[in-house]
Length: 480
Ligand code: PNW
Image 1: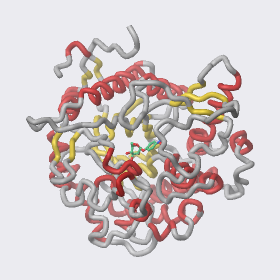
Image 2 (image 1 turned 45 degrees about the vertical axis):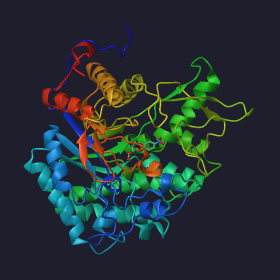
Image 3 (image 1 turned 180 degrees about the vertical axis):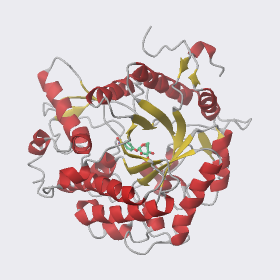
């Protein structure tokens, strides 16, 4: 029997938070309403050639107008928690100074709506929609953006800091730095290694400053967190020293540049050296390390697929990271001699290999290095080409299978001692999947983009049984 055959029922610990996640730009729409300022994703998506089919978040799921309906949907599904993000330009249209009261009021209503329904609010302050005005001054390449972020955190904290249970500063700073400023595949579409490393540091700094600012103003003793998309990177041939070195370098650039300052209080010297030909790191100044390292009540981990690398011998055409769309630059600066290999099927609609063992391995690796650090899976899920059947239901057995196997992997990690506090499925709704537009459906709830009607998929009904019981049923007791 392999790790993935799960025949017995698995019970999750009491208090384990089953929920689901979304992000403001991906679902809200109402992009120019009630005083919201433009973000880099408005600019990027409205620039031809950046997003599949020319899709934008102008309307998205129209969640801004349908928030009550969506809250009721969460109740129907029995969710314990809801992870959402706050749109900075909705709250502060130019990223600085004047507050937009209507924007703040929207999130206040959302939080009240969650609490009234007994759902735990997990708020993310930044899920990629930087106010365009700040990008015009250099965005995350600019230290001042980190300082502006702390001011924004403070004013949101003043408004919601009596009600939010978990504050997450940043979602996936890896994506912001390396896709936004490295590959150019995400907004603001800059392809420059030096800019990407500057962004890494200023995002780390923004996190530390924001936690400090929140602590000054909140009153309800919440949990503080950050969400990272950590990469589980395996050497193709574990007995090849060159492949092991390739995997270590990839881990250094993708993971250690975040984990080390956040949790250990310093940058890994060897990674700074290994990337020294691309940036001089002079923007890291004395004292920054202590600003960045703030105690984290929970570390958010997003996981979709592992990676497999080998040393590239320089011959032929190098394979690139799986699923990555063609972009002007690289999301892996400094890895000229590292090749990312296709890992075989099955794949999701993103082209990402389904491999739950990577999640268990990742959780154990973090748990072993930081045993006292509570973790939460803040995203995990899969895109499939779902279609509505004639009877009006959406049968998505592949997604159920994906979720079941990843939840079993998470359960194995718990049994092996990892302090895992919850699981947020990505995503509650089909939504704007960044450069892939509306072509990729990650939701457990189907959205018809003509009518905006929401229909829970089979996976949503399956997930609600899990959330209500806390028991992941074995395959043989599954009713499909
Ligand atoms: C995450 N990569 O994005 C985000 O947090 C979500 O907003 C997004 O919808 C979800 O995962 C699904 O993609 C990622 O290229 C985008 O490695 C790209 C990568 C990783 C995460």
